[in-house]
Amino acid sequence: MKSVLYKTFLLLICILIISCKKEKENLKPEENIKQESGFKVPIEYYKLDNGLKVILSQDKTSPTAIVAVYYNIGFRNEPRDRTGFAHLFEHMMFQGSKNLGKMEFIQLIQKNGGILNGSTRFDFTNYFEIIPSHKLETILWAEADRMKGLDITQDNLTNQQGVVKNEVKVNVLNQPYGGFPWLDMPQYANTNWYNAHNFYGDLKDLDAAKLEDVDLFFKTFYAPNNAAISVVGDFDMGKTKKWIQKYFGGIPSSKLPETPDISEPKQEEQKEFTKDDPLANKPAIAIAYHMPERNTPEYYAMGLLDQILVQGDNALLVQKLQNEKGVTSNVNGGINYLGNMFNYKGPMLWMYNFTYDNETSREDILSSIEEVMQNLNTEISQEKIDLAIIKMRSKLYDDLGGTFGLGRADLLCSFALFDDQPEKINNIEEEFKKITPEIMSKTIKEYLRNTNRTIITVNPLLANKENTKS
Image (tube, rainbow, N blue to C red; front, side, top):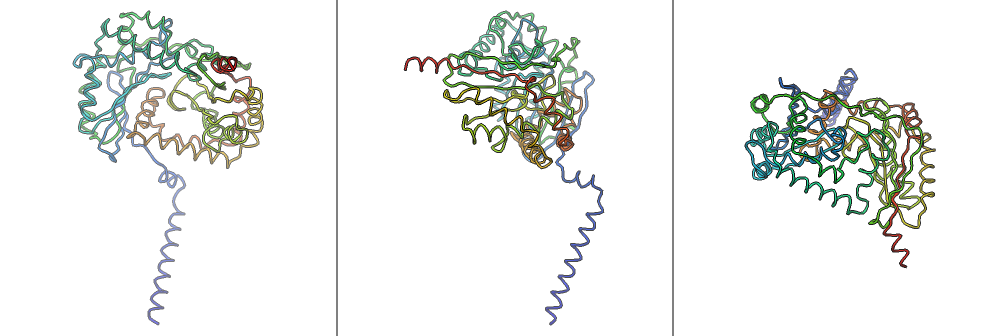
């Protein structure tokens, strides 16, 4: 009897505790609940006197640190008649500096157990190193050393001109579907030279680059007031601040040129082009639409439409073209083929592309696509939006945590360079949650219209030649 009463007493106590806990939770303000459930990137943001933007974000989960330096110069605003110059200069940054000879920067990172790389994008050129935490000061010194001054010589320039030209030949000219569609589409869909030129570089333009061009480019754009540095990972905040001031604080700023007009006029007619490819054995198609302006509700709506239309097995175009029609097995797409929808500043395209069998007609494919796009508005519901947000969040968190936090460093530098607000990284998910079915419908009508569309079709000359032989 005592045992039964004792168990009953314990049960009542448990029920009371649970009840009190629920009641307490119900008393919490809604904002606090949201704040507690959301992941927040820790950020400390400040600027040096010379204009360098500094973003520090601690993460003690791994004894590593990332140093990322982003310069506010990319493909768009490289000099006219010097196509590919921004990319050429990315290579020059590894050719030696005041205290580090040719290849010594790379060796310094690798011999200390780290990895490094650099890339040129539409609106920035970036360099990063992932190193053991105890080597952080060494890497900050090395990055500052090449920001202070490069070893700009004719030998280094000639050597890297050859390297870049060979890269163009290997990756574009001598590859089936080379440059399709990431290099081709901006040239066809855009009209402003800054957005529409061959940013990988015309071979004649690469040959025409002179030593004085390189020197002027470096002194103008590779300056602290045109750059942002982020440090992400396991580091001591106080020491890191002192090191950044010590090594970067004395580098003089530059007089930056007037920002060119990179705006794109509104597209009012559909554009269609055919690209003959002597190395392709299957036809391919790419379709692109001009994006809404960054940070607008329509911009975030297009991010969700990207998820609904092309991202994942349940995407509408994937379902139609791969699963139902079977015309292709590789629908690829997204916003900004050279990055993601957050790390660019100027005009951008939402695009998707795929190859298809020679027996399939282009008209049948376009008809299937048209069916999806015409029915798109009826597919949009709050439930569909919520599912798209889940997919977007999953990809975002993968990027932020992947490669020891390199995605975090990327967004912090991008938001600092473009918006002077690296803290925007913590508001991304909330911006998507503001999107309603009405905003989605408005975006579909304004931006996913055929008159805002550019279509490129690859004509496979290799396949045509083989068919002629047979």
